[in-house]
Length: 341
Length: 248
Image 1 (cartoon, rainbow over the protein chains, first blue to last red):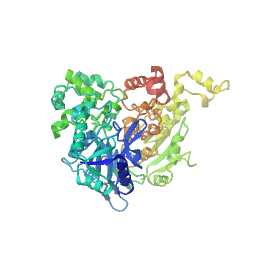
Image 2: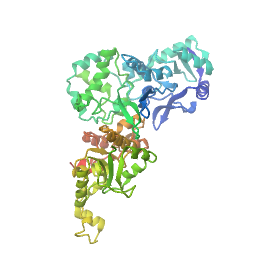
Image 3: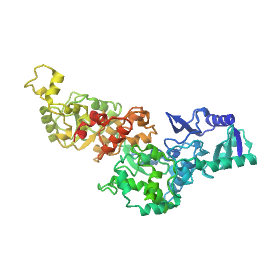
Image 4: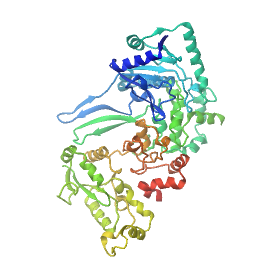
C-alpha cells in the first residue's frame, strides 16, 4: 500500500491529463448529480460523489457504437470497426468495479466480443472507496460496498492524504511514472482496513436477507401478484435498464447512407422493459405484457444470470431506483417485499 | 428504376419540407436515388405521376380531403411527414372548441360564408382521411430519420421507427432527468427518434413526435402530479401535440 498527499494527488492527475497519451476520465458534478466525463483539470474531480447518472460501462459498451462499415461503390468491401480510445478512469466505486468484472465474464463467454474486450484491456481503472452513500444504494447488503480486486489502483480518503492499493502492474506503472508517493506503514494499512470494514454499515437501505437467497426466492415468486401490481405503473421507458451497470443488451441496426452505396452497422443499448425488446420479425412479441417485462428484469438480476454465470447481477448501486419516475424499479424494495410475502 | 417522389403540403408551416432542403449537399445524393417530380417549396415543375407521396400538414377542410384522396389514389406509398400530418399536430388544438367559435375567433366578422377556403372542420391527421403507409414524426422531422425513411423506401424495406419513449435516448445522453430540475416532461410516453433533443438542452419534452404505441398515460399523469402538477394541468400538457390521442 502507498500513500499520497492530496495536493500531490492533484498533481498526479494533472500529469496524467497533460502527459499521458490516454484520455483521462473522472467523476464530475452535473447539476446536483455526478457523471463520468473527460477531465480537463484535476480540480474537476469529485471523489466525494455518491453515485453517477450512468456507470462507467458506457466507455466499454458505448450507448451507440459502429461495428462495421461497408462500401459497394466498386466491389463489395466491408471493414470491421473497433474504435478504441485508451482511458484512465478515476473514481470508480467498488460496486461499479464488480459490475465491470461481471461484464468481463459476459463479453468473454461464448463469443469473444472484441469491441468490448479491447476497450477494457486498453484502459486503467482507478477506484475510490465510497465516502458518501446514495440514499438509493444498498451495496452494503450486496457485498459490493468494497472490493479487493477489479481495479488497477484503489484510493481511500484519509483526510490529508489518500491510501493507494495497487491492483495491477499497469496501475503501479503510472504511479511510479507520474506520482510522488510514500510507502504506507502498518498503522495506515490497519486504518484503511478499518475504514473499509465500516463502509457497508453506512448504507441505510438494506436487503433484509442474504443475497444468496435471491435465486430461490425469485423462482418461488415467479407468479407473485406483485409483478402485475407494480407493472401497472410501469412506463416501459427502459430507464432502469439503461442506467444499470450490469444491463448489457443491445440492438443491432444497419444505417445506410443516402447514396445507398455506403453504410454502417451499429449497436445501441436496448432494454428488456421496452415494448419491442422481445418482438421478432414476424411481429410476434414474446414479452408483450408490461408485467412480463417488468418481472423479467428482476428474474434476470437475481436468478437467470446466477444460473448462467454464478453471480447475482445486481450490485446494489440504486441507479434504477433513482431513475424510475413511478418508483417501482427499486430492487431492494421489490426483493424485500417478495421475502415478506 | 428510381422511384418517383412528390411532396405535398396541407395545413402546416412547411418546416418539415424545409428539413428536406436542410439536407443541403446530401440533396445531390437524394436526387440520385429518387426522382423528385413535385416539390413546391423547391422547384416549379410538377407531375402527377409519382410512386411515393410525402404529405406534410393536417387536414383542415373538405377541399383538403378531396385533394388528399387524389394524392392517395396516385401514390403507391404515402408517407405522413411531420407532426401535423402524423397526429394533427398543434393544428388539432382547435378541436377543443366548436368550429363556429374557431371561425369567429380567427376571422371575426369577415364575410367567409360560402367560401370553400374558409370552410373548415375539426382538424384531422392524414390517417384520419386516407391510409398512411409510413410516418416520419416530429416538429419538425429529424433529418437523419428522414434520410433513414427515404433510404429504406428506396431499398424496398420497412423503415425502423422507434417505438420506445424519449427516456431511452435521454438516458443514453447521460442527462440529469428534467423532472429533477422542476420541469414537467412528456418524454416517458413520447416516441423517441429525436435524440432527446429538448431534454438534452434542459427543456422538457412536449411530445411533438406523438405517443409510443402503448403509452402508460395513467402512470405518466401520476408522475406529473407527484412532481407538482394538478391533474388538469397535467392533461393540458398533452394538448399541444397529442390532442387526438388524449381526446379518445
